[in-house]
Figure 1 (cartoon, helix red, strand yellow):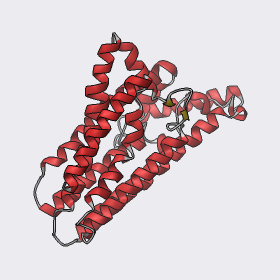
Figure 2: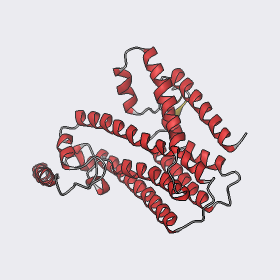
Figure 3: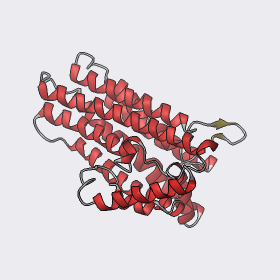
Figure 4: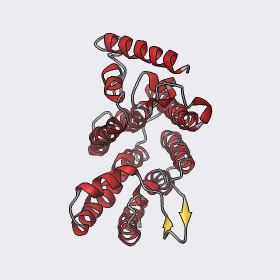
Length: 295
């Protein structure tokens, strides 16, 4: 089997395993546990025969660092919590339970699990990683544009790590009794660090890395390639995921609707243009609330 065929076999096996595990355990976050693991696995499989391709190796190393970082963050959030009494890995993304309640009947949900959660999502992981394989099939020499793109990809990786750590720090801050009366901390959502300028800075950096990976392929080939569709679909998936997550957050925290008006969901390009008044009002009211609570 060729490296590409081996990776396709891994994909099919993971889809089957994730679906069966979801049916047996009634927990469909097995896909979430595979999300960050599979791209580095594919990168290693595809490296066979192309270890002398510097462009591929550099990009593959960044993909593997991405996977290690995201897996560690997911583990820190309890994503790999395990118990034999609870049939193995028992942590589940809260959004799946929300969808489970909206989809009528067990059969309908399991079909959703098969075709969307397990089938579509793991295929998408394969698709947005696939430009890396074709990058290994190119022989054009490295040029200045390659180094710029690789540097941008590394910077986005670092910024995503910073955003994730800031989010974890916020969760710890929010849970600490010392900050029980701090109005800003108890908003329920993060407004510190990178999160002050974007509601989802981690999403921006996540999507940016896979887009840049495709741009590396485009630059090496000098032409578009169908594998770029994976990054496009990933962006569309994140649009839907953002809407779902924010609808849940908004239902839990009353101030979130005002934060949505004050801060962009992704790129902060209009932060101080159309949102200037909303931001001023949000921070002014928060300062008043903090003074009243003694926070």
